Length: 123
Image 1 (cartoon, rainbow, N blue to C red):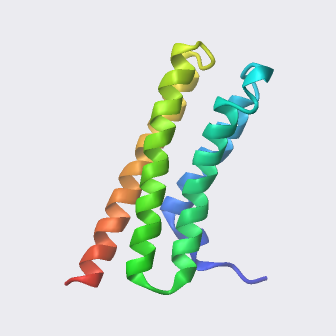
Image 2: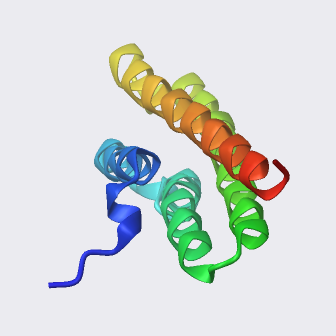
């Protein structure tokens, strides 16, 4: 079976882990939030993964950087949604910390990866 090269990227693996965590954590949110914050958090989390993959397969470093910029924006969205969820008591302190630690790790990986591609583009 063909294994896409992006599967080997730590940033892809960690962003996928973050998306799965978001899906698991939001299962416990109130049912009336299914089309609200649950949908927004899941969309932002899966957007990170999707943009890493889409940028990877585009074939252009310049385009890839643009997709990574979008993924970085989605990590910022998740930050805002996570803060709101915590303040609404949808996330307890332990789950918020798990989420936030992984979100920050993914954001750092994205920034570092984007920087390395920019250096490759403009040595």
